[in-house]
Amino acid sequence: MPDRIDLLQGTLDLLILRTLQLGPAHGHAIAKHIQRTSEEVLQVETGSLYPALHRLEAQGWIHASWAVSDKGKRARYYRLTPAGKKQLAAQQSRWQQWSRAMALVLNPQSGGSS
Amino acid sequence: MPDRIDLLQGTLDLLILRTLQLGPAHGHAIAKHIQRTSEEVLQVETGSLYPALHRLEAQGWIHASWAVSDKGKRARYYRLTPAGKKQLAAQQSRWQQWSRAMALVLNPQSGGSS
DNA sequence: AGCTTTAAGTAGACAATCTACACAATATGC
DNA sequence: GCATATTGTGTAGATTGTCTACTTAAAGCT
Image 1 (cartoon, chains in turn green, purple, orange, blue):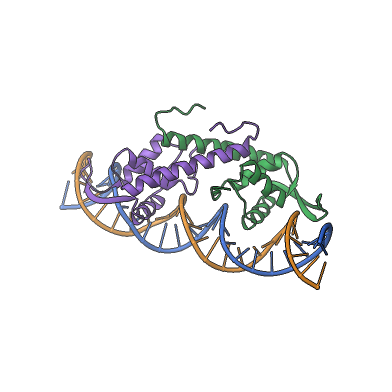
Image 2 (image 1 turned 60 degrees about the vertical axis):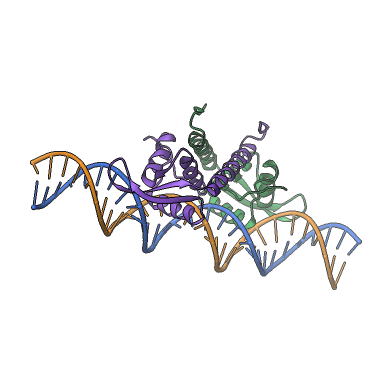
């Protein structure tokens, strides 16, 4: 774990929604998935994770229910709602805009090959 | 101006430093440059710009001096210090890490071709 | 009994953006 | 001479989303 970096503020929702697109999961597993998939670069702290999950649930983008994990512990499983899928698409396109705009400023000559 | 989006928190310093790499400029001009180069997607509000410039100056990454602009107004010109150049490089590489890590999570199959 | 792992959660600090103002000097129009 | 637009710098306060640090709890193993 050479270099882990703080999350970019505003991107956690997107990371969570995208993870849930692969299927329902509980908080702990979501955090681990993000961490593993990003090759340990992105680490989601529990103090960020749970408030974010509650936020997303309050907005109706994900839905929660209690169940039991593989390890036999009670866990709160989240899944995407239809509104959540729309939100995921919106946030994905917003990320595209960001990274394209940043690229334009960071290396102006290279036309942003959409 | 179809769709402008809020800045990603933590990227303004990088945008400013990169702009100053092209040569000294005053605040107003820096903001305009970022806006134009990003094709109007990124807009820097004055309430973000000036605190950021003061921040960067306080850290010794940029140096300021009063001068007169083309339009004949007094303006505070900023230029990169040697420490600022190092900081720019560091922040550029951090942005690379971010966008690569995000890409890994957002579309897992495409191996991040560095 | 005690320790580790899995899992959910809260409280409070902190940082960087935003909106909405205020201020000043120059140039232009009447 | 006076109003208005343009250029340019700045502050105050709200908001938001991370973070660190801590708490709780149950299961499994020794």
